[in-house]
Length: 317
Image 1 (cartoon, helix red, strand yellow):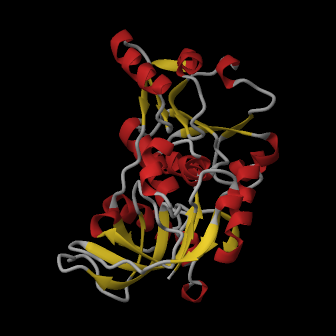
Image 2: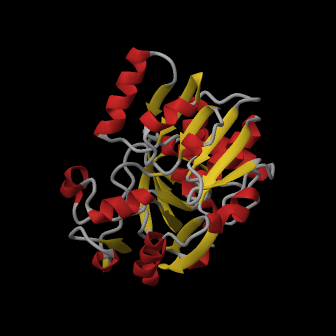
Image 3: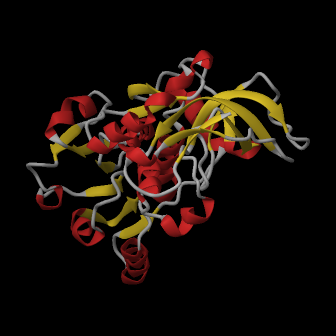
């Protein structure tokens, strides 16, 4: 089979299309013919070497944490799926979705939504799960709360805005001026231009701050949180670990960081919301596998509005 791989860390130019052995599903694994995968910040970070201590032992590495495609074979312990079904999922830390085939444990998968294409479905797993688990889990979001979404125009942010509205929050979104209309169209009640206004000095207060961009400092954000408010970060770093521990000791507003979990159960909920026309993935551009370098470069440029998808098996979509 063909797969996108990189043997060294670096720019998009390190990505190569190579012929490798097709995987075989073991035990509770499902072999998927991949229709498409999407590019997340995690893919960029892995390729650039930001997590080289984790990924160095998996080199050469196949990027791609999201997959959508068709089941072609099942391991002997698989009870949830049969060949021919279309599924999507978050494949885990080792990635591997940028290939024509991948084996994934059945509990990480769900059946695809019926109302959208496999290309659109490939945009959902990592970003959608991060937003869902950050808001409902770590953030404990509830109807009637004031929620602030930082990085609202990014891959995670577009799901966070929509899901916060579904939960029943009043949503204030933070993004660049060029993307304000786009974010307002997702349902945000208010939009703050991040290039002109510092929301931490705006005089407003929120019950929940969800940092979809992973760059907000809790020490600055806590002064605009309600006394029992929460901030949820999407990036694990020594600073965030320390901030979370300190907030537990100090009391008042708390900080929690999220490690997104692959969950077929949570994906099934996202699929239902999509089929109910309450949630929609936004795909900015689609690239063929042969243009994966261009796809990564485009995401790195910061110009995308929504997710960027790479097709692995175009005949499936």
